[in-house]
Length: 204
Length: 162
Image (cartoon, rainbow over all chains, first blue to last red; front, side, top):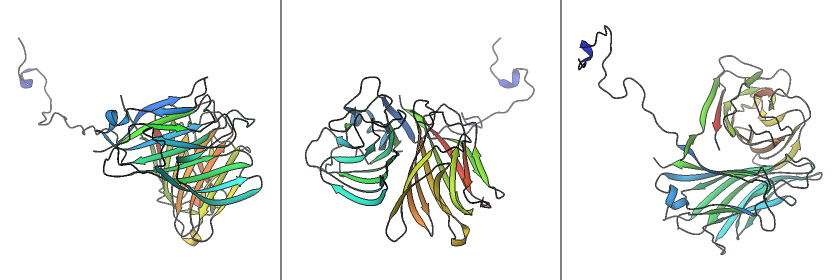
């Protein structure tokens, strides 16, 4: 005979809840989520592209973050970022860096109006193969269509006689939602072990 | 499928002064670590070490603004700097540390630090620790003997997947 009531089940002690949570706290998903990761394998890559971002993520996320661990095939290099494949003169950036080159230490500021330069990566020529440059890039309101796009980054590398730490502010003069992001360094490749991870910050 | 991450792994708020604070047995299931610090420190030169390593493997460069001309400097070698500390000037450190690829074994360990130090400076730091070992512990210490982390200082460790 099926038991239809808990009071008829033979259980002597039990507790009834009016909520499906049954006394548990509600699960609230993290607001910071991993979306994609690309790791460079044995074949060096001249660029890494995150694509179809608007169609995949615009409805869920407000901001994007890219966390980078990169090593270039040439000497110390500035890495650039291109949005939506736009090669026009629609970018601007400002940066401040602390740099040690040889025995010279310096804090300097710089700016540009072409592609967004985001940071420098370590040199392939360094004797230790485990040396990589790192950076964290935040892209704010990535999918808003009423705002030009703004970017900030913090990045560094530590190579003997060529250390740097830099903070950048970038602008992409377009109100289009971001659909693709290309990370590259003209004339150079990212080598094995380089890692680029894309994260989204939820909009609600 | 997106993966929720930036997961709180450990949190410590000091109820007594201490000369060192250590996160140990750090799980290896994440790719990056973030550590948020909000605290005050007697003594000067707030530093970190990983895996208890005291050899000359720490390379770091910082740049700071103090309201005057900015400065930068590369320093080493037996630990890695976060900020200045020192209670005499009422310093309070609020810093965010990001260890990149901490659990991998094919790279030197790297860290990016942003530190806002009241009454002193705003500082950004890039560090490389010349070991390919995964990070299993991180110790916060005061470089100058006699210094300590003060009551109420908070340290929170987060894991970030990739």
